[in-house]
Image 1: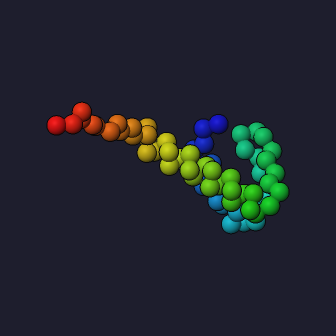
Image 2: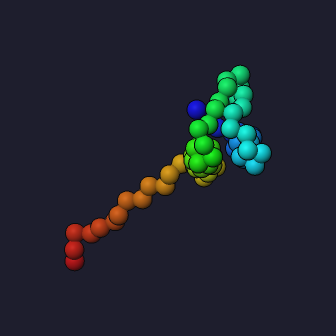
Image 3: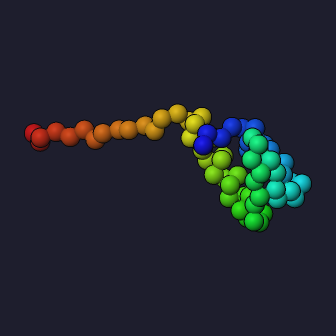
Length: 67
């Protein structure tokens, strides 16, 4: 699932309010604990950071056959 910044903001607001269940896109989501909510927020933020950063950079070593 592709997360948006709005998803992260909403989850952060729910954590601040102490709300453990909410309706997101017509689906009811219930978290077991605050730790579960924080783990989900970290996952969303990591995905967003990866999406913002773009593709991973690949580099190849350069070698010579000697003198």
